[in-house]
Length: 142
Image 1 (tube, rainbow, N blue to C red):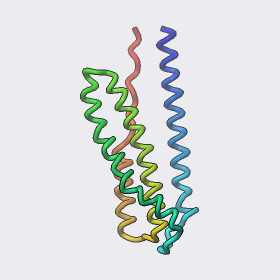
Image 2 (cartoon, rainbow, N blue to C red):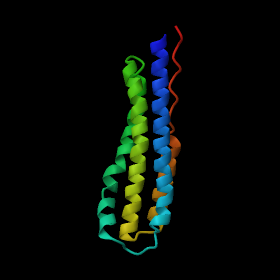
Image 3 (cartoon, helix red, strand yellow):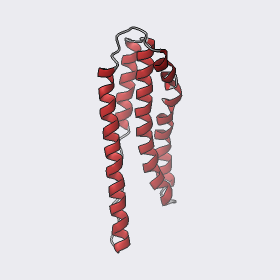
Image 4 (cartoon, one colour):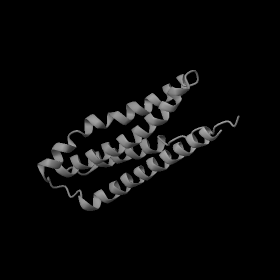
């Protein structure tokens, strides 16, 4: 019984650490537009070079989010895969933050503004709205 409560406390601690990390990344992304304003002028080549990895990274969270339901279904027979689904979902949220950062750097470096940026931001908001983390089931007391 003591071992079970210790593992629940460890998972709770890990969940808090992940939540704090996500909060810090979100705050950093909220500050980014104030540091690098999209003014329509091309800027440093370095930002544009790093931002060119955006099309590669942007598809990672999409694939990971599509993987989660499959892991949840197969997890009925293999519980370890259900736990993996939670990890994959957290990984997809972190990769969303990476894609946002690279997309913003691409727009800043190339001087892009307008409809393309607005469409990308709307896609981002819909992705965040559909990828909320699930709460793990509570352990059954024996």
